[in-house]
Amino acid sequence: MMGRLLLAMFVSLMSLPLWADEVVGPHVQGETFEYTTGGQTYKGYLAYNASDDQPRPGVLLVHEWWGLNDYIKHRADQLAALGFVALAVDMYGDGKVAQHPDDAKAFSSQVMQDWPAARARLDAALAALRQHPAVDGDHIAAMGYCFGGGVVMNMALAGMPIDAAISFHGSPTQAVSQPQPFDGLVRIYNGQDDPLVDKQALADMAATLEKDGAKVRVVEYPGATHAFTNPDADALAKEFDLPLGYNAAADAASWQAALLTLDKALNQ
Image 1: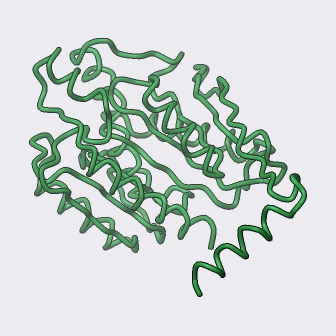
Image 2 (image 1 turned 135 degrees about the horizontal axis):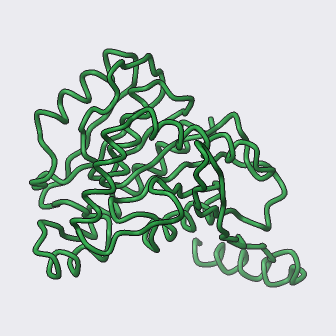
């Protein structure tokens, strides 16, 4: 009986005009996106679906300590293909990218040691993103990796106007001196075996965010270490003797969880 039903459905579908089954897929457009603050130009990367004529939720992406490289641009493209407008921000200025961990540490430390200046850059990026015609400016989330994960946690801690903050293997260093209320979602995805994330600092960050109204969830993936979402992590670990490692299972699980969070925060 079931076989006959499936055959009938197949014959029915085959009898439809060809254009009845035609679906236009996403046409991801990626481009340099400049914005300024404090007399400095920042060169982000904006990705969106050029086939879509409706404003869509925006996602602010904050890069790893390496800077605005191909990895974070790829994540922006992925989000654009799924119906978001993604802006990968430039936290260092002029699209600067570190080639060595010493430079990456210096660049990222300089940002986190001057939160007011970092916030000004983020505010400028958010304002520019909201003004883009492809963006529904009432629905914005932030997502970050490693250094960028720490940035988005501090964005929530500062009470910045976003609906969700999502961190992947982010550093829980508190850069905000005076935490503000935040009633959005905070999701923190970390490797259980990550030696670069201090467990107590992470617990303190989560507790502070919850105290100020955030809906916090921390997920730790067994067997995963630092930078577990980045396929380049193994090569970087070998080249610079760093405790990094890609973990495909943790990458896939955390990505799916993040998408569900974005859907909950931005589409409902």
